Structure formats: structure tokens, C-alpha cells
Amino acid sequence: MRSLLATKHVQAEASERVALVPEGIGDFDLKRLPLRIRQQVKMLLEGSFVNRTENLLAFGNPGSGKTHLLCGICHELAHRGRNVYFSSCDAIVQQLLRAKRDLELDKLLKKLSRFDAIMIDDFGYVKQDRDEMEVLFSLLAHRYERGSMLITCNLPFSKWETIFKDPMTTAAAIDRLVHHSVVLELNVPSYRAEQARKRKKRDGDMATPESCPL
Image (cartoon, rainbow, N blue to C red; front, side, top):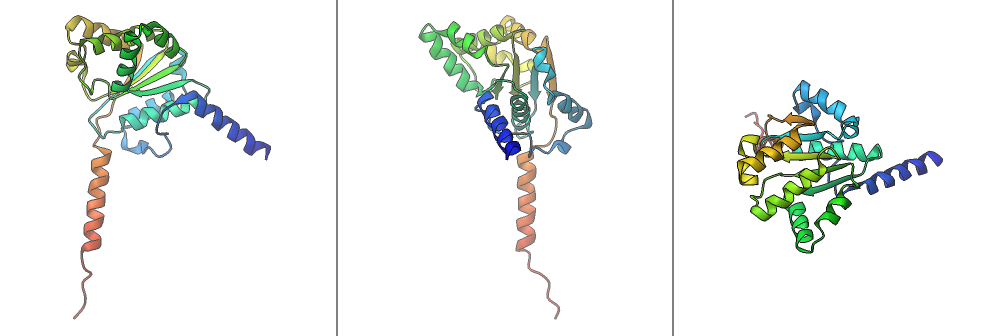
């Protein structure tokens, strides 16, 4: 009973430490990834990159598993005692904009600084206007060498000017993220597309009538 209570206590503490992260690593099929990336993920799950305030950047096409993989790493960080925050890019940008409008941007940035790691999903998926770009850059600048960022993105760095609107700001944003970072390029087939093909094949096999001897 003591062991069970201790386990529940650890789980409860972990839940408090990981804010809004939707998925764990348990049902992620690591075998889909190349060996080199699997080895990287194994080291990342240990969490030492957070000690070094390194960033984790995951690139890949939609459905490649970027979000699920980084969420799984976030959950493992929480179980190891780290405070982790998750948000979509659009949601955190809107939160930052409201804080700026209310003259509380510095207060919000300080509040976010209590998290050891912040995960931003679908970075750049929504094309920001200049006000949105400025608050997003403010967050990156504030986190630089202070705390880890975990980011998923469909866009390669060469297209980030569509996010930050001008070459100098784009270069500065990339420089702050990449200076201390691990980059995962998930050049793998879409997991959702693979599952859809398997379902279609299975349904087709079930619909095929069995041959009957005459």
C-alpha cells in the first residue's frame, strides 16, 4: 500500500509540473524513427539538456510525429521533477498580445520563466502580423540562455521570414534558438497516413468474400 501511495504521489506531482501537455511517450512508436534519432531521443528523455538550457527543435511534415514525440519528452521531464509548459504557437502569441495590451508583458514573461521548459507546438503555423511577431520574439529573447524551449515546426529555417517578417529579426530569432540546441529532423512518412492506409486495407480485406468451393 505504501508503494502504491508513493506512486500516486509521484504521478500527482508530475501532473502539477507539466501544464497542459496532451500526450506521453508510452504509445509513440520509436521504431518508426531512424536509429540515429532514436539514440538522440533516448538521451533527451534523461533531461540533461534542460540543465544546460538547451533548446529542442523538431522539424518534419504534418503527421510525422513531432508533437507526440516532444510531448512525450515533456512528460518524462515532469516525472523527473521539471516544470513544463505546453502551448500551441497561436495560443501563446494571443496570451502575450493580451499581456502587452494590458501593460503586463514583463509580468507574464517572468511568470513563464518559472518553467524549466516551454513547448510551443506548430511554430509559425499561423502567419503572424508584426505585433504578433514582436511578442513572439520577446519570448524567445527572454528565454535565451535562461530556460529550454521545445518547438515543433513544419517550416525549414529558410522560410522563417514568413513568421518574423524581416531578415534581421528572422536571423536573430534563429540564432537565439540554435545557439544551444538539439535539432531533430523527422523525415519519416506520416503516421496518420500510414494508419489510414492500414485501415483501408483491413476494411478491404474484410469486405472481400471468401471463395467457396463448387
